[in-house]
Image (tube, rainbow, N blue to C red):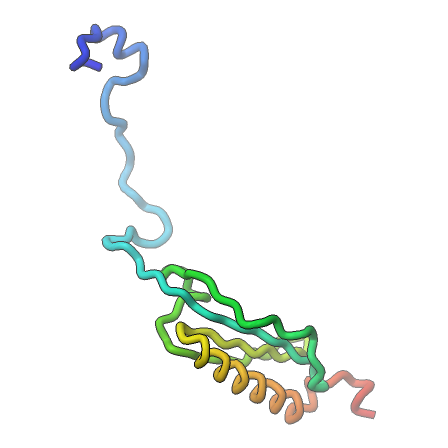
Length: 131
């Protein structure tokens, strides 16, 4: 505005008096010094009741672009799988990775492991099925 010849009082009235002073960044986490990595990740999930029956029909293999800061979704692994036991007695099978075929294979392994757990742990079964 000064370069365009505006008088100082007019510049002040418009609120363009200079750069705004701000405190140093103290937010949660650090500031990235580079562009985070991005990867297309395929994933699949299934859940089983304590008797081994499906909680729901497993969804087809899906995928999406994920960023490095998405800790629960991002991976550079070809394929990885896990099995999680929930307090309500269900067992979940998860698989994810960057190679679609490898993820499908890992998902089948996770499902097999989940079904084995359902059959081996009697305290996860409902009480009425143990009579």
